[in-house]
Amino acid sequence: MRALVNLRQLIVSRQDGCLSKMPIEMGRLIHLEYLSTFVVGDKSRRSIKELQCLELGRTINIFNLEKVRSKEEANEANLKGKGKLSMLHLSWGSHVSSDDTSYMLEDDVLEGLQPHPNLKQLRINNFGGKNFPRWMMSGCGSNLPNLVNLYLHNCKILEGAPLLGQLPSLKIFHLTEMKRMKSFGSRLYYNDGNHGSIQYDQQVAANAITTTSSCSSSLTTLFPSLEELSLGQMPSLEEWVEPQPQDSCPSFPRLEKILVKDCPKLMIIPSQFPSLKHLHIERSNGTLLRFVVEVPSLTKLHINEVPDLQFLPEGLLHNNITDLVIKKIPNFEAIITPTEEDVQVQVQVQVLPLSLESLEVSDFPSMTSPPDLRGLHCIRKLYFAHNEKITRLPEGLHTLRTLELICLGCFSSELESFPNLESLHHLPSLRILLIIGWSKLSSLPEEIQSLTQLQELGIFDYHSMVALPDIFRNFSSLQMLHINGCAKLKYFPKEEELQGITALQWLFIDGCPLLSKRCAKGRGEEWPKIKHIQGIKLDGQYLFPYPSRSRFSGWGQNQQKQLRGSPS
Image (cartoon, rainbow, N blue to C red):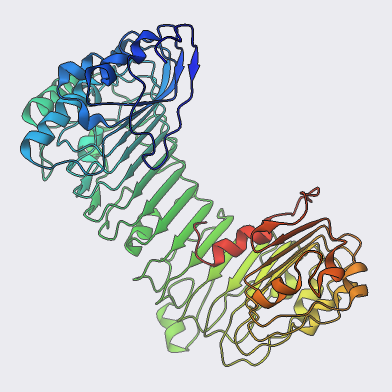
């Protein structure tokens, strides 16, 4: 490799540690402009010093930084001199030592890996030090003025975040697996000399104080450009501190998206988000919702697996919300908290925003009454499934004239038939129907045969159904058919039924072992009934090349994954 002195680009793949070392003397490739990956080695000819004279641009991922032995050796990589580099990924091994010598060494190494001020994206993975470097504790953002994206993952000993509040260009900030962090915020905005529960190295803290003091006169806004903030897998995090009022500085003026996942102890967050549009809370504390009550800019609210939540706080669901997802909450009873009068007359009030365009209410073992859908004149997508105590469909379903997609089913196991679906006949815009069965159901609802405008039909979890009924000829517009989780299903309708659907382009079959066997290409008993279909996917395998897709194509597959537990 060292003889290829005129090489301009080198793309190196490294997945699951399969690339253990680099070719020797990479530093001789002095014309190299792009190197995707560099794995630090033990020997000098594979050390990080090999990067010193390379004028690299675009992106570089540097792995095995635990093999760098000092700050001076890290400096030799000359990352600070690489002005063409826009994205930098720094990664230590995942099983580094946690003794005092080790974390002090990693502190020094990260200090020596200071990038050029032109850097736009920085990822730090598995850092085992206790302190952020001085170049990340600059209160005015002078060292990282162009940084747009910052990702910190599995920095297991760190207890606080770097001083980022004045970074002028930062738009996306993700923190994941920061297992010791208890408080998030105070040192993020400024250094006021009050360390609280977060212990920083004294020299780094003093540097941050000096920098912040020198910039205080020009400070106007905290996080002026931040648009997305994600906190994930932080089991010790208890508070996200709000900027103090006496600072008289606006904060988070452009923050539109907040994601909080797996932060079960987090109970305090700021309440002033003038531009917040999307809030996602997953496997975290439901009390966080009270901090965003009456945030008028909020349009998208996703709440998933919040175990302590029974009701949504009053005032949370205002009429600007267009996308609402509430699912997998074991004690959830109703959309909003009933008033005292409602309790006395035993009425559950469930008021939904009239602005809703998409609604998912699913996986509620305690919910006995479906939400009232009357007045939702803008709604396009509705998912109401896997609510095991439900015995009837929501009120007002027949009024949803704008509804294009509906997913229904997996209701009370005591029901021996699907609730009457005649209300679907009044939905002129309906194009996609996803219907989910349960153990007692052996046939599809008769009412669906009148839905001749359907373009996509999904049939899931009809465990007792042996044969599909002869109703498919009515679906003259059907383009996609999904059949999933029907363990006993063996037979399609009559051959002329499926062949009469001239618009049918896609057939997906998964989790139906008997039917899959009978649909084997060229030899299965059911094969003659489906061989005319352009695109067939059988248990994950495509039997034909892809045909063209309609504008609705794929919705059913995506929503099937969501309702089975994949992230939304």
